[in-house]
Image (spheres, rainbow, N blue to C red):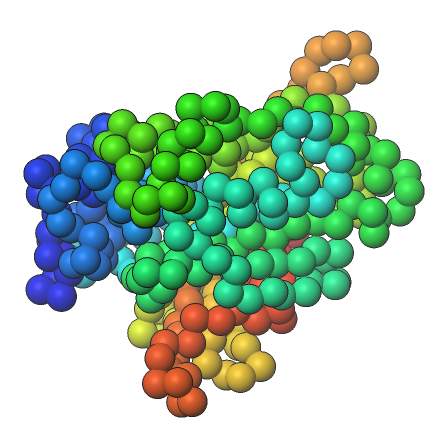
Length: 343
């Protein structure tokens, strides 16, 4: 059950109706009874506002991640039994800043979608050790209670020339998952701040398609060649723009990490601490998934590779503003990326 601070949704409320239309009644109820939902999102209207559409997308992505990541589902089920709501802090995805066929390159493939939902870039985070850059998209309306998106992009041009060629072979025929119906609905939401229930459903359904692999099954040769120079690029080769992880905001991530280790969860060895000391993060190591690869003779083979994972974060108050520190940290992010690497 939800706590008193976060009243439960019912099937008449806008968010519940929208989420039910997109993912079904039972998963929608599971999501809304698990996540801490701001009271401002639980009104009744036939025209969802951008904050409600954004939260519906996040809730749907959260449920999808639980389907794909057994260790995340195990943790969330344990929390459900306590009756405490999960504060969903942020989710992450990875993109390719390079030739991507019909798909816009890098973070722009998602900024064009997130901005009409009320998001703006709240921070830029260079990740030079990974040849990547991260951008934090924060919601304008309820920045502390609507999850952020941490969107990273791999700068293909910084890879060795041969690896650039393999990357283009993998990602160069990507397709754009968003069509005319999605763009019309997004335009209405961007213009008015609200949209019809049908338009909201079109937006969330289309957005969920965007969090997927948009390129063909890679060849094993191209995958291994890219893996040699960028494990993050190789991850995108198999997983595409899937939700890389979901993150729970907790009171004491250090204590939680020790508790989860004692319960047998495969945790990241150390907690990452930001330079200002106010943001602390750790994660469960990525679950393995079985993925197909094309072979030279036209057949396919399968390998176990790293999939998505679940993360935890503690945020302290910024003494200068008196507000929760919603920033990220390049060092923290670089350390967290390691949980999708094969050991």
